[in-house]
Image (cartoon, rainbow, N blue to C red):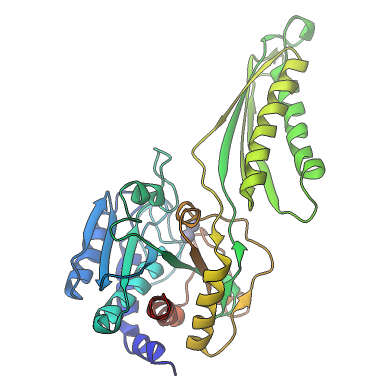
Length: 394
Ligand SMILES: [Zn+2]
Ligand SMILES: [Zn+2]
């Protein structure tokens, strides 16, 4: 067994205990007071001097001046109830159904091991524990953005970034998936307000029906996927909400459409945003109505730097003794590490914790989702190995 795997395995009970504490005490968004206190106390106990650089954003460093690699974990839960029969089940209306409790516990384990090897480190390891990955904050500014604005990539300047996400239901326990180039999708929410002229249902000619316009806009937008996207490219465009009217015989004066756009290429993302505006405005004009298109705060796609990823996956294979899974296509979900991945070379791994056959039947964000604690020490070892080996070569 590789020495870091052995050291992480020896720490397994502590990693699991930390995870269970966090799981039982979930907090959301930027309001991670108790979680932050727990993480800061642990880091202090391990010999660090952690700093709070913004609301619930923690940074700690270990090593000596030189090249710097950042290891990142997210700490936030989701505003939902957990429906599981676990002794450490979250009680109340928040739950770690995305597994960020495991990420925080794995990185805490890595922090402890890295501190024990501080003299061997050929540069600096920066640990980043972030709030609000899920973007549940009403400001629309996610935790990753807030930490970038607060300077997480500076002083010392970060040269490379590594992160990982536990995956329940679709990957074998201990399987490590990665992909060079785009890995996860961008995510943009948009809102289209169609302004017509209300009138009696028996006299449509006297008004401008916004429902009719909204239906044309809906169809026009869906045609973007069929007619303006390269067949080999992957993009999802969903209208999840279409609201208008209150009664059978009244033509309302407004209709509202809200949807989400997911793309894996920044060029396509920008093009689709422009086309959604054009189609909405022109469809509305064609029927004598007006359309106003608003894009809320969005996040880009997580981009895995090909050279860094090739390098880190070699170290991962050396650590585990088996090959990484090369993920053929990007996933349609998102992660706000994307912001950082567009600024600094980044590698983001997917760490499998069991398929349906292995007993992990529920997807993330489901109240029944379970995470296999047997793989946590592997995630810890992967953090350590990535940092130590990368610093040895840069
Ligand atoms: Zn999530
Ligand atoms: Zn997540």
